[in-house]
Image (cartoon, rainbow, N blue to C red; front, top):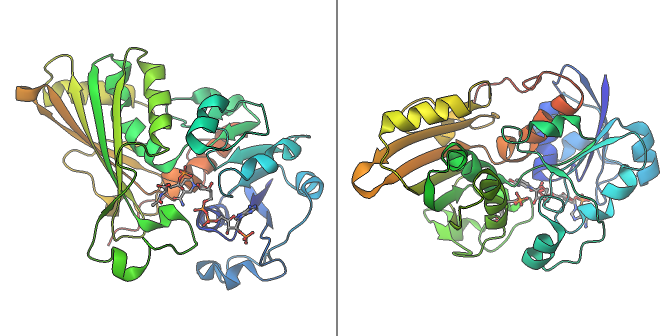
Length: 337
Ligand SMILES: NC(=O)C1=CN([C@@H]2O[C@H](COP(=O)(O)OP(=O)(O)OC[C@H]3O[C@@H](n4cnc5c(N)ncnc54)[C@H](OP(=O)(O)O)[C@@H]3O)[C@@H](O)[C@H]2O)C=CC1
Ligand SMILES: CC(=O)N[C@@H](CCC(=O)OP(=O)(O)O)C(=O)O
């Protein structure tokens, strides 16, 4: 059994890691850390786990965490994960970081986040569908939630060198903002509302640019605008991809089917994808339609931000890093109505 630990287990992605790992056939949950809740039962705050685990939150030193765990998921805010990762990697423990600290080249990270990086190491970007080499690593940077949905929506056309301009319009549920309440998450501000933010310069744009330009070095014009919607989970992305050639919907289907062949968590169900069809699952559902008149392809993607956008994708990475089947413990349908 793989002994797994979670740093930052009291948060939303921590809770989702616990939910998925508690029934993973090859994992034993060894450790859930919290600075503020040490000594309290994990199920006293993650109420959905009542009856599933006896763990109590702990707050041990990094050396002890390393000794007790074969894998550690770091689920703390960006700018703080880099305080944990170097010492965790100072042994045989594998580490998957859910924060943004190791997703970008360091100069790009420092510019976008305004944070001085304290650790010079690089990590593989763990978007498994594009980076199978992550399986060979002991340390993986788990992708951002918006970039997962946006990059998967555009990757096949980028890899074919067909995109001229990419415009991503994404809508997220509020759990993307983490467990601490904010003005935006206050019920009267969000219910019956839609809140666009960081209209032209959201920090996740850099991840989408990094990944799409890896696929097509000539692609320059990449735009991203996020919105918060009054739902708890899910990211729905509408990508307007202006193409260099006129494509038909059938052309696009051929390109996407070929690109995502043997990628179990990307589905092309036909028609318009739905957040409810992926909620609680590790799937990314993609739909598309050609607008021949304007050389535009509209691609739609739906993910659960806490699963494919964070904790599920982290477990997908863990499975591959330990030589397990990619879908192990993750082959679950959505909690649709
Ligand atoms: N929510 C989402 O949809 C996604 C989140 N992520 C990333 O995953 C990471 C975790 O996100 P999320 O679970 O939403 O965050 P939360 O705010 O819900 O939880 C983070 C937890 O980390 C602990 N923490 C906070 N500050 C520090 C610190 N300075 N040092 C150590 N521990 C700290 C807190 O626990 P305590 O105070 O009990 O110690 C807190 O419960 C973040 O980097 C986030 O950006 C990535 C993809 C999607
Ligand atoms: C609604 C909301 O605030 N979402 C967050 C993104 C979610 C997140 O956790 O970002 P990472 O994937 O980089 O960790 C934001 O816009 O900053």
